[in-house]
Structures are given as structure tokens and as C-alpha cells.
Image 1 (cartoon, one colour):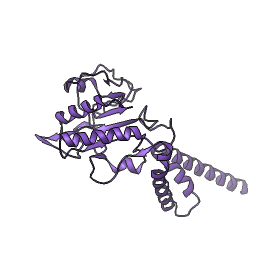
Image 2 (tube, rainbow, N blue to C red; image 1 turned 90 degrees about the vertical axis):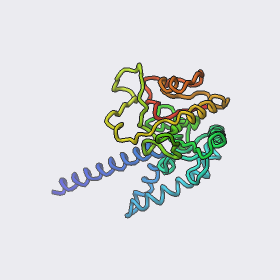
Image 3 (cartoon, rainbow, N blue to C red; image 1 turned 120 degrees about the horizontal axis):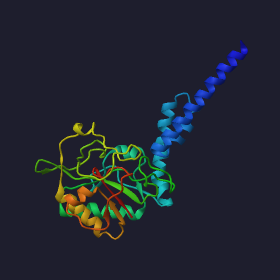
Image 4 (cartoon, rainbow, N blue to C red; image 1 turned 45 degrees about the vertical axis):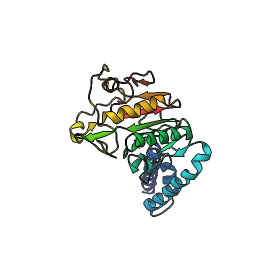
Length: 260
């Protein structure tokens, strides 16, 4: 009887350990600091409250610590020309870049406002606050603070739509067009055809898109710009710096990827 009780308690302890390890891994991959916050919270009875407090303290501390280690947060609040597309990216600590890239984005957003008053440049995924080489899933290359994704500019009918994207997080609302990529399951090139009818019928605001790409092309700090080939042709972009990302990477007809 005692042996059965011991075995049951041991099994329960192992399951709890596995549960905590899985949660730590998932939270770490999502936000970098979430796993550490969960680890801190394990010793508290009110674990979720403890986790929320620990995570908030760690995330706020990162805002002050990261610049000394070479990363700076992109603005999360206010009505500036440069904004994160969703607070979700800020909550998950995915809004950090190196200072040079931050200044490039600030310059881009100011130029867009000068050329088109009332235009905001919206940022999607950037990078975590600490450590080069730390993966920012599901991206293949956002691991050093030198890459960032930008949302497209949209219009509804003839009117520009400020601060609007077709999907709530800026991704996965694709501009359909021809592609030579095979339909291969073993890539990140998700088509998500079942999801496309759910998005609002906004159209690309091509004048602003061309202007943004032109500014980025002329910015000597920017080394590469990724968009789908059919969009490059559609917008009339002729520049070696603007290129196709390859068939194994995620589609880039829902956002612009830039890197130093």
C-alpha cells in the first residue's frame, strides 16, 4: 500500500515537473522573459498573480537594461509617426532592435509623415531585448536585433486607412499573386487559404507603399528588403536591395522585412 502511494506521489511529482518545464519552454520562446517569470512564480500559492507581477517587473526592467547591452525598445504608446502595430508585440518583448535600426525606422516614419501627413509606420515583429542568436519564432532570422517587419499601408475604397491592417497582428493576410514556389509542407511558407476570407477587404495603398520602399532603398543603413516577387513587380520596384526571400521562408506578401 505504501509502495503504491509512493509510486503515485512520484508519478504526480514527475508530471508536475514536466508541466512546469513545458510552460517554461513555451513562455521563453514566446517572450524570452516569460519562462524566468514562471520559474519565479512556482514557489507561490497564487502562482498566476506571482507570475504576472514577476513578468511585469522583468519586462519593465528590460526597457532600462537592454540599451546598455545594445538593444533599444521601439515605441509602444503614444501617437507618434512610428508605432508598434499591436500592444501584443510589446507585452511579449518582441519590440527591440539595435540603435542603428531604430534610427532608420524613426527616419522612415518621419519622412512618410512629411510626404503623407497623417501616415503612421507600423512595426510588427522585431527582436527580444537580450542575446544574439536567441530565436524569435516562427522567424528564421530575427535573432540579432538587426531585422524587423513592417506592416503594409492599406486603403478602404479611395481613402487611406491610418493605423489599420487586414489582420489583428499584421500577418497572414496575403496579397495573392503568382509564385513559382512548390506546395511543400516542410517550409514556413503557409498559404492559410482557409483564413483569407475572414479578413476585411482592404486594398494596398500603393502610393505609400512605393514611397516607403523608395525611402528604404535609398537608406544606406538598410542592407536587404524582402517582399514577394509579384509585389515587387506590381509596385514597379527595380532595385537589387529588394529581393525574394526564398521558398522555404514565410510568405512576404503580408509584410515588409528589412535588415541592416
